[in-house]
Image (cartoon, rainbow, N blue to C red; front, side):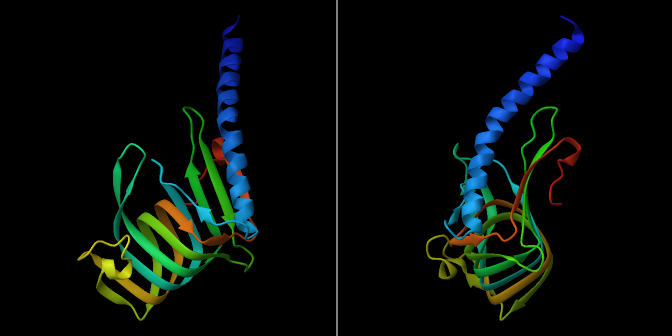
Length: 203
């Protein structure tokens, strides 16, 4: 067998393995997101060992709370995060991406929604984030509140917290560990597996 044939067989095997892993995951993700887009089910995401990126041209929210916390992986590894709660949120031009690359093959899964003036919407949005960038405006903000007063279940007594009646963030760029919501409606949903030179994250 020639070296070229060996490479072809090796490449074919690698791609078959990738397809075997990705097809069920993509179908599940697509099913979940399709349900969310139609308001049929609530969004709920377990903490994994990966971070993911979320970008939006603008986020508008009411009932904002923020405090520190920890998230834990299945193997008990812990990560410090900033926990943000928003009672009602609108996200314009939403982009979510996760790096799913395998050795030698760049792969990025992207979800886009909320374009054309029809924002994605979420109720009881809870975000465990590692970083956040953007231009933010808060109304009636209170800084230095006891985190336990903001959330008796998740907030640690005596820990720092802050809250505001409303928040607007433009040019949002966020790296998160997990996101959950009561209902997440994704208008104009587009889910895509991007491979090779097209494997680019939201930012």
